[in-house]
Image (cartoon, rainbow, N blue to C red):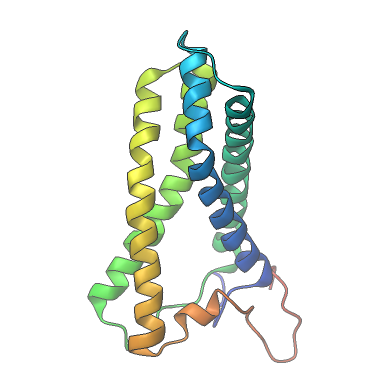
Length: 176
């Protein structure tokens, strides 16, 4: 069992923010991917820009999936800081549910997208499109929760994902 942590490692923080940026890019590139997908199904031709956006969307999805697997492996190996001791059990449950939801969605979205794009599975494409709503809801809950902790409860929850854990006498290594 990993030791109790007071914060995240630099690698955990970097993976958090890189995945966040990639997910936002995926949303931006969605329209181009949608046009490229319609074309692949025999619909109207996508523009070169839409095809490029589609290619970038596919590459971004693969990157999100691989980085999410790395992030999960690191979390299992290194652990994560516990919630504040004074946090209400309902908030603990909500935070855990949002985090589990995020891990699920950042793994499922690339898988459903790959099944749709590479396998031509239309049902998977529908699930993939519906997953965008889940991402928006989870993102909103995540941001509101972090801001609530920071400005109302005055905890260090938000600061932990901005600054790596400092441990006395040891380097900030991911494997310790």
